[in-house]
Length: 395
Image 1 (tube, rainbow, N blue to C red):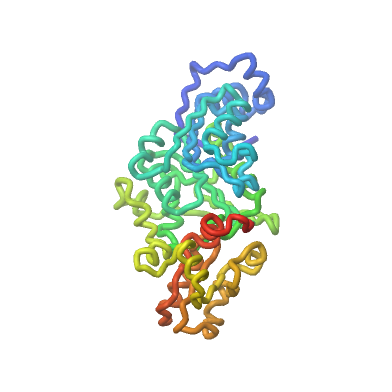
Image 2 (image 1 turned 60 degrees about the horizontal axis):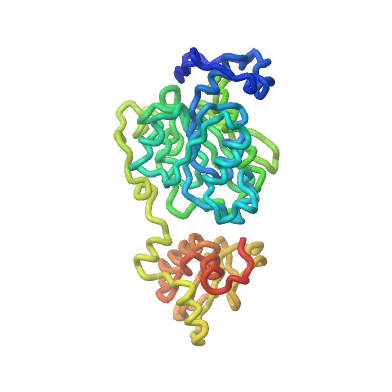
């Protein structure tokens, strides 16, 4: 028999909820599970879930919650579908490229289950709108890939006393937990401070195996359904770690931090803050503001004028094989400290990577060593392709 959660606190009112004849057929395999049954399916129908992000994690999340019959699903996103999304964001198809992700998602989900009400918020989640958007939902699911939004979602859920079903992915590894300050720790209890800006690469720079968000997003959907039904043992106070290469799961026990600034005994954060500032200024912003940056158009003009510029590509060798700016030398960021003596401090040096993050850290490193004629290519080779050489393959 599945262990039940005691006094979880969703307080879902199912007294006046009824299933249609079609819904009895649709959810028949749920109805014959003792731990779900008719009452459980009515709980699902009466529940509301907000998904932050319609990308890699949001795709399987939205599909399975819609298929399960969660009555009202909200999705927050402000992006459009790109070809690079299709390797993992299975809710979108090739014909959706260039289209709003929310329009694409709504179409697929409504076709899957017209009984579910799909609500969309085509906006960036911010300190100004988060509480207003989140307050009317029972559960929030974090499908984002950046630290400012993770801390924003966490703090808003703590302030509104909502459970936050968390997931993150990178290359072959993923994490899942349920942060619910009313019953256990929150995200800040685990990560009180964000990592230094630029230290942890995004999936866009570091990559992610396409199937991984399907696994992690499905686990998040499972946790949501368990929370709604009030059955099983949720990942409250537990962090589930998944390694796809080893096909292994590990579990870390999490404890509530009494000194947590948002859910501790004497919280200092009592309203939403500036999360961009909290997570720090990125190296790219620092270089932009200090003038140690060059645009793709400016670099093109200098090269065409025959100026003696040393181009350094700080990406990895497998990326260099895909595309490169003609005449550039490959020095991966990790190898830069041991190869720095090969560079002439008197020369004009331009460093680039895929999007500008890694090369910005490389520029900062060289500046600290006394290099004064070193600049970062703003936007990396992606900007070079967009502005200068659109025939170059983009990944």
